[in-house]
Amino acid sequence: MHKSLVSITDYSKQEILSILESARDFEVNPNRKTLDGKVIATLFFEPSTRTRLSFETAVVRLGGSIIGFSDAATSSSSKGETLNDTIHMVSCYADAIVMRHPLEGAARYAAEVSPVPIINAGDGANQHPSQTLLDLYSILKTQGTLENLTICLVGDLKYGRTVHSLIQAMSHFNPSFKFIAPDELRLPDEYRVFCRRNGIPFTEASELNDNFNDADILYMTRVQKERFLDQIEYERVKNVYTLGNDMLSGSKPNLKSLHPLPRVNEISMDVDKNEKAYYFQQAQNGLYVRQAIVSKVLELID
Amino acid sequence: MEKELKVAALRNGTVIDHIPADKLFQVVSILQLKNTNYPITIGNNLESKHIGTKGIIKIADRILSEDETGKIALVAPNATINIIGEYKVIEKRPLVPADEVHDLVYCANPVCITNHQPVPTNFYVLKDNGHVKLKCRYCEREFLREEIKLKKK
Ligand SMILES: [Zn+2]
Image (cartoon, rainbow over all chains, first blue to last red; front, side, top):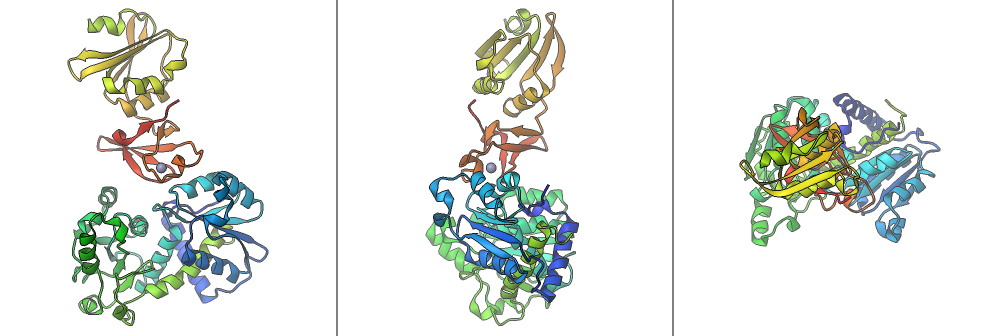
């Protein structure tokens, strides 16, 4: 049975740590020939240039080749082909498939029917495990550990899949959470239940202010306009959740601010030069983490 | 009267009683009684001291499997299932929800792959403090028992 990566919950604590360790190794030397002769397909049924380029660069720097498509309009699914058939067709040519799909659960289904490993590069609002692993790698790199950290999650905690996956992944490492969100975008009940069941302490607030002063990580997410029924409410919330440089003055010296990008106005530009801003390096870390993920599903590393 | 309906006519088989009236046809569908050749008696909108109106199903000569009672437990958790032998109750079958349900219900998430492609559904049944939830194997969302809709077979 091949080893796909569909959901962050597919990986044990040990597997997560070994991925991060091998990412560290790739960061030291990202150019190798370990994928020489391998073909990786990137099937993007909805466009995501950022994620696709990151995966494709990861593969090319390891000497592998890329086939695929970057949006559904150019794929056979626009002619009504089932996902099952597309996956079978592509697996005739590729050693592994990186897939992004607008429907939730598409990656799990693809992994069940595919003869080659599937890497989920996002299935709707459900899972995006390579993002989660690069978040973890960024936390590990900046804090020196994943254990016993206080993580402040801000913004759209209701629909933000990166937030949900991060909560699941961090649960291995004895974290404390602070959830800061407007009432409309509060963390869903099932994740609060998840925290309680796993003995993870958390607090909730609806204003950002300096509520993160005891945090080690400040994880900002995008507050999307289309999530609001009331546009006046959106305008209010948008401004309350903008991180400005002056707001960082009382924070811990080791604090780093992360953001899955692209940002809109959650973090003002004057934060970029602050050494506590880490979102651009975070994106770069994605390359090494994805090299580790591709190598793992192809069983080139443990 | 109630007692008579329950067991009088059945020599061997299964009696499912205290089904909420609005769930009766879901149970009929779960057991695929439309296509059965066993003698069956179905009553509905009968008076019940406990639940207002109820339904009852009697199936002669057939004993339900654990899998079937596990599915019934999802839609009618307070029903009673008695296995009858020679006119007597020989087993009171507890309604323990199944651990997994395969292609029995629709996923309530409109953007789940199972609602757009020919993919049979699969749910894990989670039991949490007396609440029963179903978690979709594909989109990973959790739903309350009341939110799910049975597939028409
Ligand atoms: Zn689903």
